[in-house]
Image 1 (cartoon, rainbow, N blue to C red):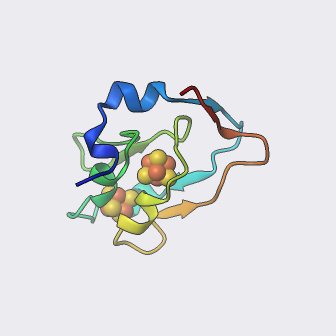
Image 2 (image 1 turned 120 degrees about the horizontal axis):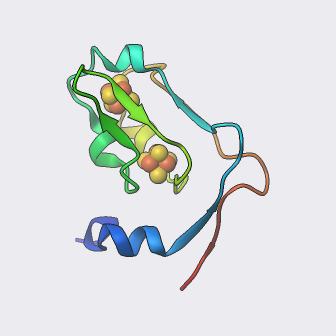
Image 3 (image 1 turned 30 degrees about the vertical axis):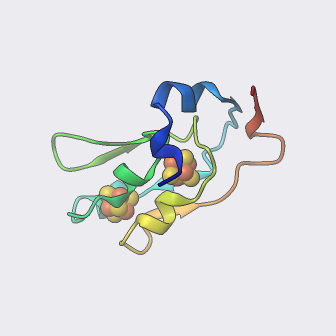
Length: 97
Ligand code: SF4
Ligand code: SF4
């Protein structure tokens, strides 16, 4: 087996830097998430950016996104995730190692 799951979360997050754009490149429609029982985004995201709330919603933070696209593939609800790359010059800027 290979992939990000073999790398510790701390090492994973420490391997990149982010230039955060003011505008979110990914948005999540939390109202659609409330009817979702699969919640594939939570396990798919290597940066742990999808966090379930106690009232059935999802909190999402775009700032440390790896731009991998896994959340969009994992989401089973059309329209819940609006996905795009960050504006030019923003997002993941380089790997330290
Ligand atoms: S998988 Fe899609 S609909 Fe379900 S919680 Fe995640 S973003 Fe929302
Ligand atoms: S694109 Fe990848 S890193 Fe960014 S929010 Fe989706 S799963 Fe997480």
